[in-house]
Length: 345
Image (cartoon, rainbow, N blue to C red; front, side, top):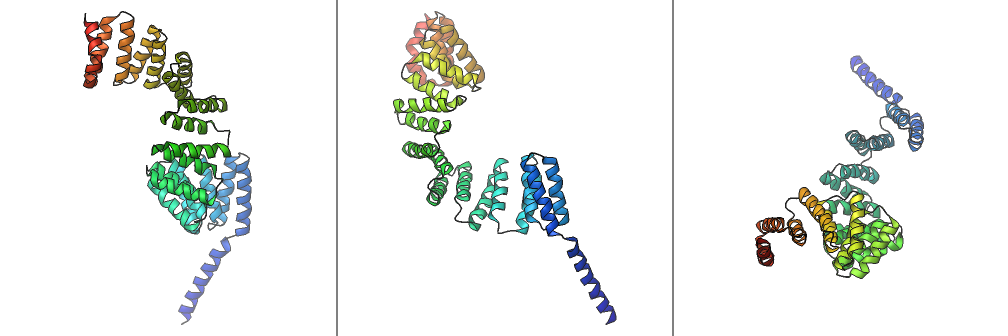
């Protein structure tokens, strides 16, 4: 009996000793210091404070959370996920911890895991428009646009002035080719925030797909006025100008888009088309050639370059390009046959 009593006493002492090592108040002081340092950009010092807060009290869930967020901000995603996961282990009912880890999973393209976390976040806080909106975003990343629309709509129901939810739903509708809905949602997003060029650009794109080119044009103008670096808006406006025979304006827009970095085959082909319609065939041929270099399977570029060669009195190269185009797309044979015959003479 004496032995058993002594053994129990030792166990109690060990437990009491473990508890004595915890100092929640001191840990909280280091946590607060870490947050303040992080907010002022002193990240190394902040990390040391979070380390100390956890060392003093390993049950300080908020310290694990903030250290995780700091690790993520320093591109230490795996460490960040580990820390936030520890916070979740300590506080499994905290929706914001699931939200934080889910956001990291989104940024690391782990969409399945992100969905699991946002399901949990919504379960823990079903009235949060933010978490429902973000779950909708994950659905969209998984290309389940119908379910994404449902979540965005629920977020808007909870917060009728939720700008991001209107924009996100608008993009989901765009993927579903529901252009009238796109116009409606981006009109609301613009009403809530008229300073985002991408909203005007996307609404303009929807108008263009509805064949309402003269509604699209002022939206692209506004997009560029709001953000002069928005290369997509120059491209989109350029196509409106091409389709309305305003070739000089189209040329200027595609030129701007290319200078802003959208140096893909389609944009060189489009600028080449503008050059060709302005009878600047040498520049057109240069652009079509660049388009073909970037994408040797871009049949339109061969067709277009063929016409520029033909109009430059270079029949052999015109014939070669049109034959290549027909080789890629045999259905073009009937529409190009008469031109091929002329180039062959």
